[in-house]
Length: 133
Image (cartoon, rainbow, N blue to C red; front, side, top):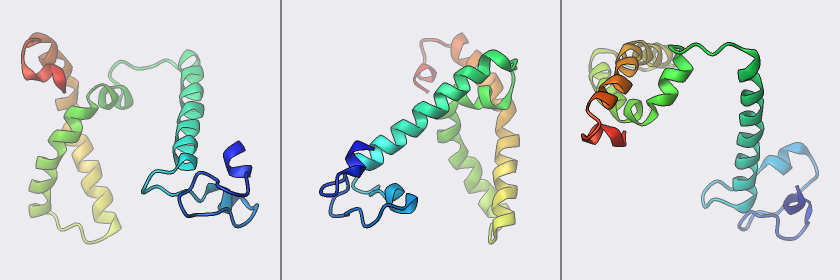
């Protein structure tokens, strides 16, 4: 807020604050990452993380819940879903938003059991390359 309130340099490279509306305050340069953009993203992540930590004590977290399963295997899911999307792009033709949502849901359903098994496999073969994913 202090950086954006300065009417000279506001953290954006060659982008000056043109007004005092909320839209102008949130207008930040992503590429190259400006100081305003980095602080905005870090601030929002800190607020969301604090809310989720507070919510965790109130809500019972399920061990096999999708958020926890995909959160524990994020890099594995990220690397492995490219192959599945390549195969699905041959079968399905995602030409619209509905097809894109269907493909996304299909990938999540396909990978849920695989991502549930992956931590056990990773623990069982602890000296393999699986420990890095």
